[in-house]
Image: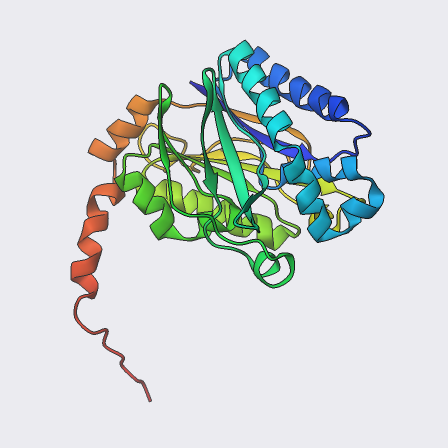
Length: 294
């Protein structure tokens, strides 16, 4: 199958129709390249704050409420596009309110409708200390015709036990939408994504926001490049990079991915990280020795 990861810029919209036209254009372009799975970035939905006007968009809390207000229309649009092109889409994540608190939610769409959603699990300092965004409950692995798919939203990709829990539940592909405002932030997510691909012998799809956003301070600067990564082992590139965009350039990164290739590298790779993961508890069961030198 072919997978596409978006390096996605923010735009101002005067109407929901303008937003729909943008998403339709992006999906249509990827579909024309015979793509079966599309991944949009974390907090890409925050551009919908523009529909509330500049005052609302500039208020980081009111912006969350404005974006969440359009969730039904966003769902309808993505369902229509997924059905029309017969593909799977991880929509750009955005706020959903659970018991009055905002979570960071990515909705997964298939040709038959909404497959479910994944909420971010571990919040960044900005989300915790300034934005009051909270974790959503639980992890999900989606069993689709394309394979078993898990989602690690941005910072979540930097925590190996989250990905590992999904891999142990069968995940072959992990989707890592991100929104980072610095080069260091981008590389943290990229390094995390590549590490998850290595240790779990799977494919990780990294889709970031890119460029400036002058109307919503929560997402004002965005740095990154879209990338699709696999384990640097048999059947995969020695760099682990299957496809990528140029830094900070909007567009799709494409890669052909084979589930058989993932299964084979797990069965008979040059290394067997997935199998040997279970050996770690035995190696750390005894106290770690600290040796002090003079």
